[in-house]
Amino acid sequence: MEQILEQLPIVLKALNVGFLQTLKLFFVTLIGAFPLGLVIAFGSMSRFKPLSYFTKFIVLIVRGTPLMIQLLIIYYFPGLVLHNPVWGGGETGRFFAASVSFILNYACYFSEIYRGGIQGVPAGQQEAGLVLGMTKGQIFLKITLLQMIKRIVPPMSNEIITLVKDTSLARIIALQEIIWAGQAFMKGSQGISGEIWPMFFTAVYYLLWNGILTVLLGRLEKKLDYFK
Image (tube, rainbow, N blue to C red; front, side, top):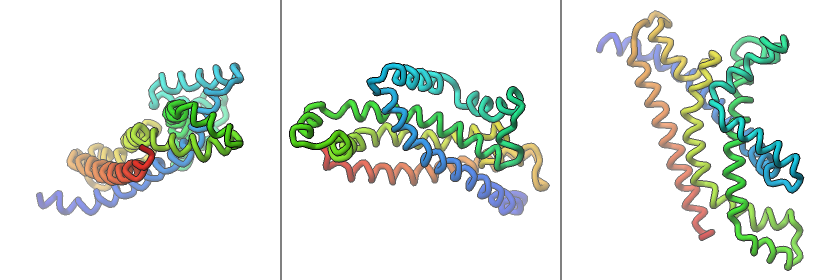
């Protein structure tokens, strides 16, 4: 126990650095995937069939293959196959590659949630908007969008919670997120080797962050109850 107490400050410092990287990847993914997912949803619902089929094909591929494989392909393919290492080396390049992979992956999942929310709004309400002289843009912003948000919050919340845990997959391309930091002490890091207890602390970080998100998303869902 005394040895653990001596090592605790070193472990927590390393985990804090890794957790900041995890949070950065988490927020960058949401910032990119939310709007891109809506664009993809519009593409899949387009009346222009080539665009619709192409978009659905991309969504099928992304949703049908593991995120880990997508990370490896996006990070290594340009350098190994095209001989153009666009990501460069170092932590910054790995972070950019991971961000692109996560944004594309989650945008495709979000697009299906958006599509379900949009199509779930009764068509009669849109027709009523046309009768009142509203444009299609006004109908979407003032009628469809608000009701869509209410419908998509629960499934979107599940995806957001999943994203927190999926960020750990970024270690496959050596991005030094929190699990990478915890696992490093098992292999030997900063004078600490063969210790598994730091991994339990990584679980505490995930539990706390997921708990905060669950509370915040639950409050958001309650605030949208006026759409019932």
